[in-house]
Structures are given as C-alpha cells and as structure tokens.
Length: 206
Length: 206
Image (cartoon, rainbow over all chains, first blue to last red; front, side, top):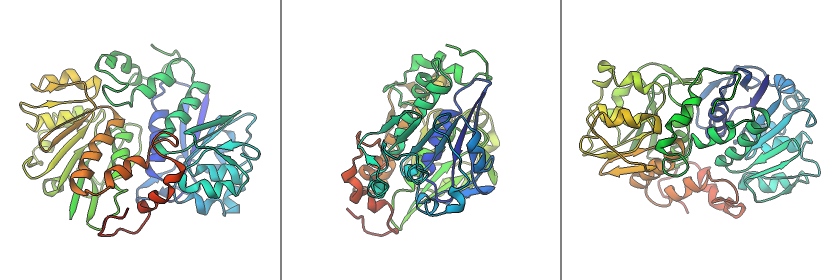
C-alpha cells in the first residue's frame, strides 16, 4: 500500500493543491491512496475556495509520502509551534516534498539543514534565513527530500513520487496525460490514456 | 467590468477547473470578476472533491467570457436538454471557450458549426460526429470561440481571455508566475510578481 498525504492549510494556492492532487489521482492501482490533510475539517484557499480535508495532519506521520502545498498561508504556519509540533516526519522512511513556499515548512521542521532546495522567487530570501542553499532549479532532490519551485514544477515533484512508489509506466503516462495536444500529448495517444480511466488494478497496464 | 464565468458540473476534471480558476484570479484589477457557475449549490469532481458554486449557469448568458471545463461529466451534459437549454450564448458579444472535452458542449450548443476546434484525444472521435474539423493543436481560436486540448493548454486559453479582457502585461505576468523556476520563472522576477499580491487596482502595474 502506498499512502500519500497532501498537507493543506488556510490561504493555500489553489493550483498548488490541485495539480498534485489531480496527477496523483491518475494512478490507477488498487494499493494507492491519496489524502488531503489539514488541522480543520475544511480549509479555505487564497482565492476563497473551501475544501474539505480527509484527515488530520498527524496522519502525515504514517504516510509513505508527505507533500506540503504553498501559498500565503505558509508564512503563518512557520510561526505556529502547535501546528509544527504535530509533525514527526522521518526522511529515512518517508518521501517528503514541497511546492513553492512549502519549502519554508520543510526548513522550519529541520528537514533542509545542510541541504540545497528550491522555492518560489518571493520566498527565496526567507528560505535563505534558515541556512538553506537555495538554487534556481525547478526541482531539487536529495535523498528522500524533494523541493519544487513554480507551480508547474509539481510535474517534477509528483513524477518523482509516482516513480518511486508506483513505478512502471505511471510517471510517464500521467505526465503525458496533462500536456497540451500537439506538444507532448497526441490524438493517437487515446488508447494509451484509457489506462487512466480503468478501475484500479494491481497490475500496471500498458 | 469584465465578468468571467466558469461552468462546472459533476465529474469535472479537477485540474481543468483549478488551473483556469487560479490563473484568472491572478489578475488584480478592480473591474475583474470570476465566478464558478453550476446548476447545483455544489458539484463533485471526478476525484470526489466537492466545490461550492457561486451562481447558476444562466448567469453565463450575461458574462463577457464563458469557459466550459471538462471531465467525464461532459458526456452526461451533452444529452441533458434541460441543462443545455439554459444557455443563450452569443459569440458576437461573448468570448466562449473550452478545455479538453468541454468542446463537446460547445459543439452541442451549435457554436462549432463549420469551425475547426481541438479537444482531448479521447474525445476526438465524438467531437467529429458533430461535423467539427478537429485539429491536433493545443489551442484553436476562430473569432470569439476558443478551444484548448490537454489540461496544460489552459495556459493558451486563459492567455487569450486575459489578453482580450484585461490587456496590459497581465497575460505575460500570470503565465510567467506559474512556470517552473529556472524554466520561464526566475528568482529575479520576485519584484515583478509582487503585482499579483497587491490589492486590486484600476491601473495595470508593471
């Protein structure tokens, strides 16, 4: 079983939840579970969209992969000791990742000590105050820690998680499935895409 | 005032709502309004996410731009005459667009008669049954009708809407703001991005 936890909070960036959520839900194996976790029953995005959570943030401690979203709300989270203290993440046994300013949370949790990472341009200076070597790349992976910068860089982050946990052709297929037609996705891919609509199956289908 | 309507329905593709929603909400002018419309108070996405609507679909008839999302639910909508009959769209005075299989709804409404369009690979054959010339391109615009195929092609669709209705540098700025760091978005863009966080203003800020 692969359990993936996406951690959200108030004032999250809509796209930074829903690109990873949608991509992760395209994996159609029966042992694949993706949950949106928060500290409340619902959290409201930066644009005012209310999203129901599917579990509390403590559940992230038992997940195989833990992904932090981003948004204006990260600034409040990194000063909320009660919230931060609920995480007992283990980079030896869990994949841990972030998009954009979610890297600030990883840094505050001590997960980026002595590491390189990336983030959103407007969060670079703050991330550097944690002693992190911030590099201008879409995705930085060191061991089981991966940080991505710029919303669409979620493709690299989720590609890494899916390749690590689902294997097979899933990474290639789910990333292909969202590309613009004529630019990575083609009409003659229709048959291949059918695997994304099938009922979950143990075996990876080609 | 620019009113933009995004029409959703049950079993919509999460990314096909939230990429356009997030991009459109990055425009920070005071005369800019984006609403999610549906026939019910809430609609549930293909992955089970419940989203509150902000108005009924009839409001699309008065919008400056009307955008249809996609997903498995489009197959139900194009056979729902009561739902279809609520639309009185006018391609002379409104921008009308779709992502992926949303083009099936445009076709059913008669908006693609004698036109070229694009769609998702798995919807190509069905779209052709409406007599539409389906072309393998990410975005096809003819007059005030624009169709996009492949989730990430929403960038072209929304770029067109934003350039047409907001003008200025907004298209370039909002599309830049979601690119991967090092691949279209750079750390020294931080100052430029600040315009996306300012309070709405009449004047376009550089």
